[in-house]
Length: 178
Image (cartoon, rainbow, N blue to C red; front, side):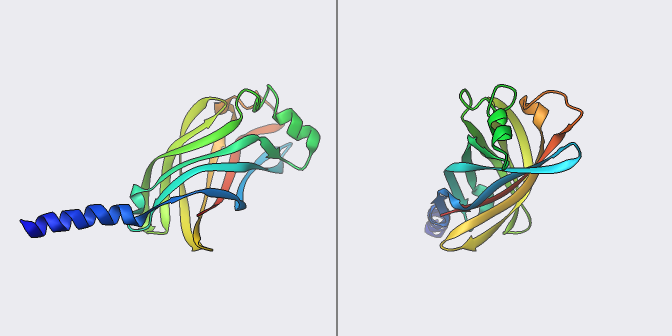
């Protein structure tokens, strides 16, 4: 009986030891997007990363992600377009300053550094479940989390119907945290 209790205590304690609370940093990170506008890829990015990542190196499926970017930091390299995107028709940054993601589940794929993320993406107060594959790499005393997913901009009331602007937006994440 002592061996069973000792084993349980060891497993319980080691799960806390292996989980690391990490902070995402703008430096070394990139939150990029691509959307077709008049059939041409238009790229942009966001900054202002904040939040917490609880990454468990031994048991990655126990990991948790709660990350935010600042919507007003949208940058497409055209100031007039960026200002338009911050307003009522798109992000309404004065009312909805943040874009938020909170994981609900992490699953394994073929190895511990290739995982699958499930979670809730919140834009303009609208919550949508998303899922995407991602990788984890140890880097500079921290971790680099990388993944790509696609969302429909109209699901979040980002602009209306358009013959020139595609509905699908590809989001490319490269988040450095330590």
